[in-house]
Length: 211
Image (cartoon, rainbow, N blue to C red):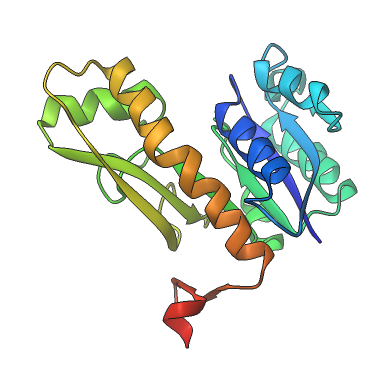
C-alpha cells in the first residue's frame, strides 16, 4: 500500500481529484495518510477533514527563520512515513534537504506543458495569463518529479488542452484542471503505486516504455 502525503496551499481541487479517484478505485493500492498546508485558511484542509484524513498547517510565517520552518516541516513529513509526497498546488519552495531525502518520491502537478510557462514566478493564474498573452493554441498540464530546480525534474505525464477563442485566464484555468490536471495526477499516483514507474538518468519511464 502506497502511503501518500498531499501538500496544498489553496482550494484543494487536485486533492479532491485524488480523494475521489481513490474512493472510485481509479487509484489503487494507495492510502492518503496526511494533508499539510502552509495556509491556515486553505479550503483543502476542510476537504481533508471531511474525508477523515489527518491534516495540519505548517506555515513559514510562524517561524523566525526559513531554516527553522524547513527543519520542522521535514520532521512532520517524516512522522507520516510517506512513500510518495504529492504537491497539489503547494506554493512553498521544497527544502533541498527534503528533495534529497525523498529523491524521486516527490511529484508535482504544474498547469502547463513544461518547458513552456514554468519556473520561478509561474504559478496559478499567472501561468494561464502568460499562455494567453503568448497566443498559444495548446496548453495543458504536467506531472513531474521534483528536483532541486523549479519545474525542472523528470516529466512523468503530460496532457494537452485546447485554448479557445475568448478564453480568460480563469476560464482556461478551469478547463486545464478539468481536462488535464484532475486526470493525470491520479493516473500518475496509480502508476507509481503499482510499480510501473522508474526514474533513471534524469528521465521518468512508464512500464510500457521499459519493456
